[in-house]
Length: 349
Ligand SMILES: Cc1cc2nc3c(=O)[nH]c(=O)nc-3n(C[C@H](O)[C@H](O)[C@H](O)COP(=O)(O)O)c2cc1C
Image (cartoon, rainbow, N blue to C red; front, side, top):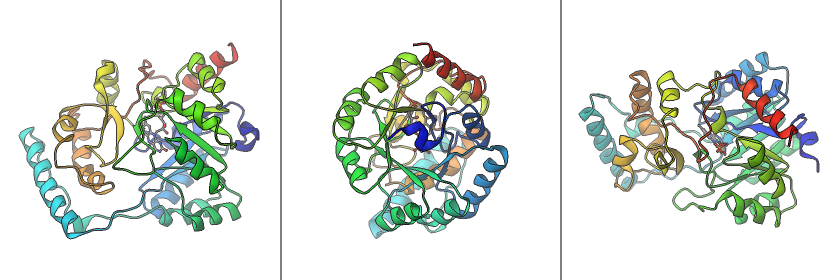
């Protein structure tokens, strides 16, 4: 199966969905460059999904993918309530020490939905490509998307996950190497496979038959060629776009990118409860290996207000800046210019 034809794109490059960073303008720029733009819906309520899809459609005349988080939500037990209360107190206290006075939400104030709430918003908006991460869609969801002729792209971080995706009829698999920026797409959240991109892609392409997209550390022609040689038909790029003009990162966050060192880039559960790769800071150092990490999405919801305040105050010690292991220069140029540069380089190899 030819992937560029299936996805109706000119170049074998996917702009990674990056919740919190990707804007409708980034998706539009990627699509207009002949790549696949991807709009992340994260944990947005259905109405917000409709709104942001509408905005993107108005800007972009081209098709783009929407992206879902398909995690399960752990049951709210008494133990979890107790741990939530303790974690809330700990984080509020930590923030206070650094002049970040913030009242985090109580557990009963949280609004926690699931991707099931978002499916109709995607289908009603006539989005024909849906990618997803944090597990697999359930059978009814797969049936619903398929009966609406939606192309499904699942994310794997191990061969076993790839096999499960293929067996359940997912059309395309995005193979996420351990070097990738942002959250791990692993099916579980406590244990994550930590398989490097070379090993993972080579083994997945030797095991499944569906077309593969590779994500993790791609930023130039050589890394693209490596992914191609190992069996990927396309690549998905995230980190190389986080400094772009269309990125939602604030100026102080883009500034932080300019001094990032390889030892600053870690896997952390501190902000969301799921492992994600990004820049370590006071918050990650204080929380990782502590007892104050709740399962996703509770930790994520709990820390949301703190991250918002830190962004507003330009406090680099309490924001989550996700990025991968390839330190790329993080150009501030437009998404189109960055992607065109990559495409031209690929063409010249
Ligand atoms: C800031 C950031 C946010 C991300 N958010 C998402 C997301 O919402 N959904 C998703 O499927 N992947 C997300 N990812 C992971 C990317 O899809 C992709 O796997 C990764 O960016 C590839 O590695 P690279 O950053 O080295 O290019 C995110 C990555 C980054 C850097």
